[in-house]
Amino acid sequence: MTVDISLIPQERVQDLISTLDNIQNSLSNNLVHKSGTETISGLKTFSSALKRSSTINQSTTSGEVEVGSITVYDKDDSPVGLYNTTRTNTTNTNRQRVTNKNVSGANWFDIRVNVNDAGKGWVSTSQGTGITSNGSLSDVSSSTSDTMIPTKGWVNNPNTSTNVVHRSGNETITGIKTFSGTSTITYLKSTEIDRTTPPSSGNQYAYIDVIDKNNNRLGVLGGKIGTDGKYGTYLQAGNEANIFVKSDGTNGYFEFPRCTTAATTTSTAANDKVAVIVTNYKSGTSWYRVWSDGWIEQGGLMSSGTTATVTLHKPFIDTNYSILTTEFQNGSTDTDGVDFTTLIRSKTTTSFSCSTASGRTNHWYAYGY
Image (tube, rainbow, N blue to C red; front, side, top):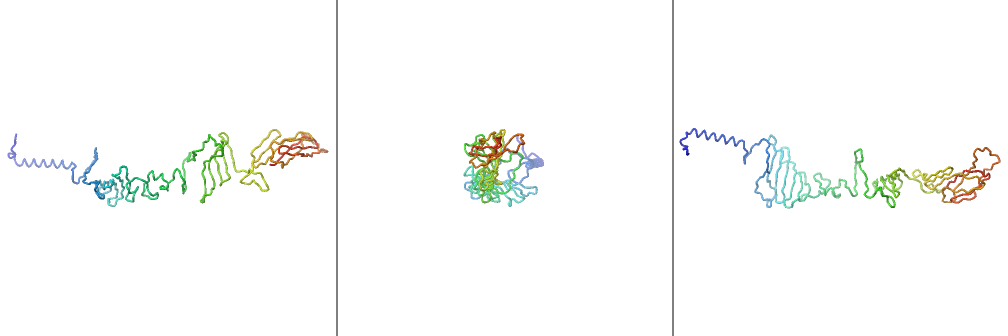
C-alpha cells in the first residue's frame, strides 16, 4: 500500500525527523568512527592485526618516512611515549620512543631490519650507534663503549671482548676477585692427568703459577702424580723448594726440601734444606739410620772372642767411616787388671775386623758416608 506523505500532518513529520536525528546522534556517540579525534574507554581486544594503509613504496622512497605510529599521552594530553614504524628504501625500522612529556626530545631505542637481506639487522639508540651501522648483525667493535651491545661472536673473540675473561688463552686480570660459597668454589682441572693411571716416566702436573711484574716466578700451587702412583698437592717457592702432601690412596705422606748431597768442606745442609732420616731399621741389638744426604749410622753387638768380623747392615761409599766399640759384660763390677782395648784390624765398605784384649762381647757403632 502506498501512503501519500502529503496527507500526513507536517508537525508529525517534523517529530519523526527529530526522533531519527536523536537516534542517529545517540548511536554515533557510542561508535568509533573511521575519522576524527575520539575518546575510547575500556579494554578493547583485537583478534587481528592492526593495519594502516600507506601509499609509500619502500623500494623507491628516499630518506625515512613514517608509515604508522602510536603515541601514549598522560591525563593532561601531554605525550609520554611513542611507538612508530618508519621505512626507507633500504630499512624497515620499528622504533619505540619514551619521553617525559616531550616526544621530540625523547631518548629512543631502534630495532632495525634490512628488508633486502633477510636475517640481518641491528640495534641502535639515541645515545649512539649500536651493533654496527651497516644493517648486518655482527660484533661490536669496542669493549669500552657503553652504547655497544655484545653478541656471542664478540664475547668469544678475545681481540674485541678485552674486558671479560675467556676460557682459553693468556689474559691479565686486575682487581680483587672474591669467590663466595661454602662448598667447592672453583677447581683446577687437568684434561690430561688420570689419577688411576700413573705416568710411565717423570711427573704430571696441574698448577697455578704466581709471578711478579717481570714474569719471574714467585711460587706455584698445584697438584701432581708420580710414576709410583702417589699423588697430591704441593707448594713451591720459586723454581726450587717445594712442600708436597701426597697419598697412595690409603696413606698420606709429607715431603719438603731436604739435603740430599753428602757434606764436604762446605756444608750442604741449611735451614731451608735440612738433612732428614729417610730409612731406619732395628732388630734385636742391630740397627741403622740412613739420612737424606747419604750419612749412615749403624750398630750392634759383636760376639765374644779375641778376634771378630762384623758385617755392616748398610754399606758405606768408602772406608773413611769411623768405628766405636765398648766392652760389655752384664753385671760385672771387675775393672782391675782388665784390658778394654779394641783394635780395628781392617775395614771394607761392607765389613770390618777387630780384636779385643779381653775377648769379651762388645757393642759397636759405625758412622760415615
